[in-house]
Amino acid sequence: MADAAAARSADIARYYDLDVAHERDDIDMYLALASGSDGPILELACGTGRICIPLAAAGYDVTGVDLDAAMLDRAGTNWREQTSADGRGGSLTLVERDVTQMELGRRFDLAILGLNSLLVIGHGKSAQRAALAAMARHLTRDGRAVIDTWLPDDDDLEVYDGRVIREWTRVDPATGAQVVKSASATFDPKTRRAVIDTQFEATGQRVNASTVTRRDEVYFPTRDELLEMIESAGLLPQQLVGDYDMSPLEGDSERVIVVAAIGHSAPDSVE
Image (cartoon, rainbow, N blue to C red):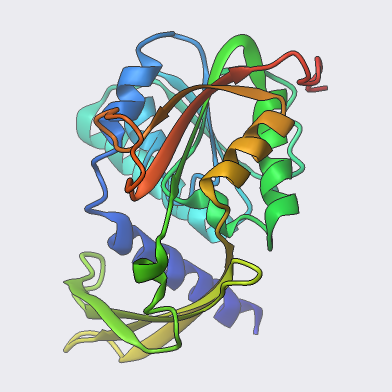
């Protein structure tokens, strides 16, 4: 049973990599933000390394934290492949830890909670608050935190009614299998919570057909709730933007990216 669970987790991590492979629009933004300091960088909920690996490859000292061991194993593999391919880069330390409770014993000049990771932390607002407070605890006094999350409107959430949506079909480069991703979700407007079920089906001549599923419980804070959580965590928003080109946040922006500095109420110690 343990071997089967480990294999399933490894499959999900590989398919997650396949899912986000084309999500590159935010990388230049993080590289630009990192260029403002040569200090260490922290990524919370780093997954398979989509953000932290390009930062480390650019020469920075990066720490990635995630609770999922299989995701971190995949990130480690991706980092080794990156360094062997180009022979350059900074450093990447991967830590298996709950980001809502982490105490790493050091501070960072840049802390990142990227691409909707806030939404899937824990099971609601209290866990999201704890993760933001952890960011504040781990910032240097001149450091910055970056939080990037989706702001769905009513039209976006209309499809969260249990219907199954086929999202993509891609080839897994590791196995040659054709992988189909489909998902269904339900949303409760009273609690702003959603349950998202994702399925990956792999078929091919050289692989055994297989299906793996994962379930995520999501809480969607409103824009005002997000800002209140950030401030209560000891962070002071400095920039509110609506896209990765740092364009202004508008009323119809599909996402919000908050760049925040440490506030006076943030704890003094990460020990």
